[in-house]
Image 1: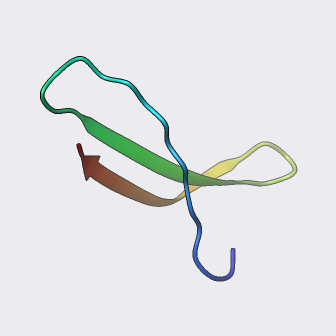
Image 2: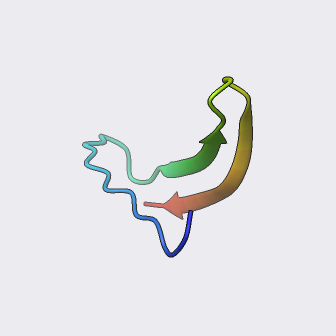
Length: 43
């Protein structure tokens, strides 16, 4: 991947706070996956 990625998340929660975790994986044509990055958002 070249450049920046983006994830758009729409969620409805019924608690005063929550955490979201995003993991971006690179998947080869043969099915093998490799973790590229992880991001955390406290909402």
